[in-house]
Amino acid sequence: KSAADRYLKREILGEGTYGVVYKAIDTKTRRIVAIKKIRLGKYKEGVNFTALREIKLLKELQDPNIIELIDTFTDKGSLNLVFEFMESDLEAVIRDRNIVLSPSDTKSYLQMTLKGLAYCHKKWVLHRDMKPNNLLIAADGQLKLADFGLARIFGSPDRRFTHQVFARWYRAPELLFGAKQYGSGVDVWATGCIFAELLLRRPFLQGSSDIDQLGKIFAAFGTPTPSQWLDMVFLPEYVEYQIVPAPPLRSLFPMASDDALDLLSKMFTYDPKARISAQQALEHRYFSTVPAPTKPALLPRPP
Ligand code: ADP
Image (cartoon, rainbow, N blue to C red; front, side, top):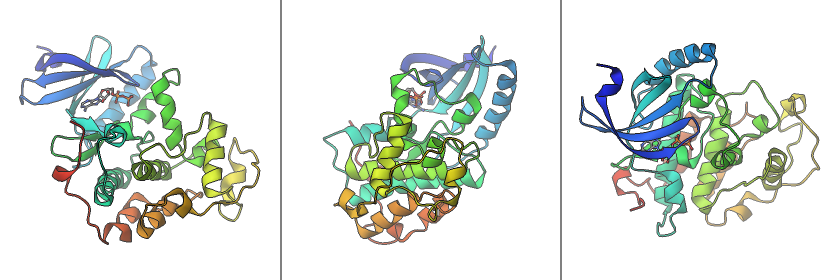
């Protein structure tokens, strides 16, 4: 009896970056699960080996705000990742025009995102592909980060697929300037973009190319000066941009509280070394002042 026999496959949930995702029943626990089937043929042998070793590490990540990797198995040339089944995702929440997000709701979604992120950063694991459709929502309202570490293991998502270009909108300026050595700051920047998207109910910085993405960033926050970001000029793809001044952040987020804006600006710090960490963000006064974050079970969700 092979490992694959433990799961009864149901319908396809969707086609993702790395392969097809199925809904299935785990006959051992009777739980509903989602199985991500990754075709290994596309990758070199060495990558397979590294992938399996790194996948083991992902299994050790256990936190209420990280999607649980229940099991892994190989089956006919594909690697199968078994995750807990999730009802919805944050993109669906943000897009649903019938959903009203109160300041408490936004605070709750951001707090859960940062909790999951801080946990992984503490374990030296980066996400690298934070975006609203990777933030899954469980039946009990808990938000959980999905696809942790997969970007590193399996390489950057293939740009041919249209749904992946959205990842650009969440990309930190150091990545857009071609930084090869980057850190947890890339996830914090992306989370800043998600925070902004919760406030605006639309993606904040919608660049149409990598160059345009930087232009959008600079238009929002002003072109970084050398004193703001010393290492910038040494980045591999650094190009000089026309100097534009920053408009007041308040003008971009007229409805946000002062605390929300202060936290947002710290997540959007240019110099990744000076950018707030996920843990520091959780300790920001935005989370300790009123209104309190909504309890997960009470959060608005799509039908
Ligand atoms: P992408 O690579 O575009 O982020 P994924 O591979 O993560 O997409 O997922 C593809 C589809 O499967 C999506 O529609 C997503 O909603 C669904 N899906 C992924 N993981 C789960 C899960 N744990 N529970 C339920 N649905 C999931």
